Image (tube, rainbow, N blue to C red):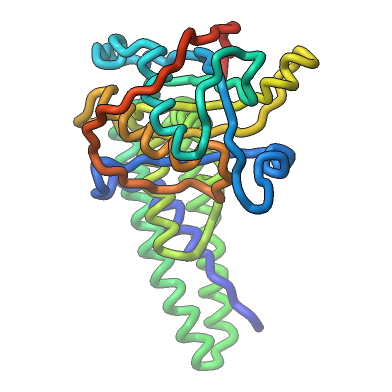
Length: 306
């Protein structure tokens, strides 16, 4: 008889719900989506080809907390910061849409975050912790029963683990229900949904998912760049998405201009590239004196959601 254990799954759920762990203050999360057609066209003989772009202002998210540092930053400032780092991937400003390969729609701002229902959350977290301890005991009983050849004892331990899995799943639903829709909305906006749904019995991955869940709960500064094929837009008047980049960092302890420097640093490395999952980056602080000539920004309209 083969026995499997849900303990890693229980630990994974607990990792997502427990109180925040310490992490580097300058952590930036990055995720990308890129079409295979775009990569095939851009990569020639294994080398990315230079591309030109124009910017378009997307949606600005002001959050729920008054943030003067965010309010004072114009879209042009966001675009200029991004342009400095886009050079790293051989993306260059075009003088007009007619001369551009890409239309870059930029959404920026801060997520709402939430701290409601803290008492209920604390109780649910404690209950999850207790279930995990019970799971470890049941797992130990299972292993000992298997080692002894005690089939009945092993079956009882297996049944106990199955019960704990059911209880944990139910309690986890309560945790997310009490969090409301804000966490889910933030996770979607920051590109964390797929990573949060994954389940790996690997402690390193548990801790990563725990950090992702914490980021979805907190206020985070973010920039989302959606790249559309400019030539297709001119020819067919339809938006054809080439790639999407999402970068975010906690708003705690920094203002938006500082965050924008970090976000641009990371955006410059991953724009137009394909990432698997969510990358954790720790960019150094920079003092920059470069400039880039953008000309007039072309505003074609506003996209309601990234």
